[in-house]
Image (cartoon, rainbow, N blue to C red; front, side, top):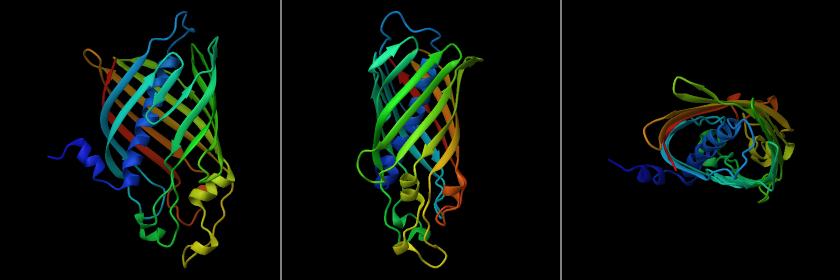
Length: 269
């Protein structure tokens, strides 16, 4: 039987990288839930927490001819007094007072495709992943955590920006922590057009040129964590994002949503 690592690294490079995407957003959901569960700002510095694990991801893709895929995934994160790493993204809290925090953030963007991923994308130029960076602002209270982030492309791939507003809460029930999140993602026209547009030179019969404009996508996410003995936990999460018409009207897109499912085993200390 193949090991997890052989299964993961036997896939195409982009597929390997996409598996880390799940580690990023599930760790963000769990960490966000932990912060939202803190009713009052701590008097002493928050205790460091490290968590690692492994699981599986079922991920859909909105592009024509690309079916949902199942990948083994690593899951990891670090929550320090000010520095945090969630999957392959992270940030630093420069300012923190009275439930408010503010500081720089970095996160990879795993959107895009390779032209040979689907026959419907033949003749298209690859759309590459990139690294986005910017600032994040959050406010936590007894009823949850509100987050706001503004990021821009740091590697000159899409040259666009994204603004995200989210709300996260924690509801303990029957030995589990239910961590729902909801929010909106505003994406600039450069970002949307890069990943979902069709250039004039890429137009074909049945695939006309398409210039996408800015888009606003709502999303919901639910993470569930069940603590086992010792430092072990079972976890699962699902994220669903509805696409704006600027994305779903693209001739290379055949879905009006993006959905991902994750499940795994986590160890923390």
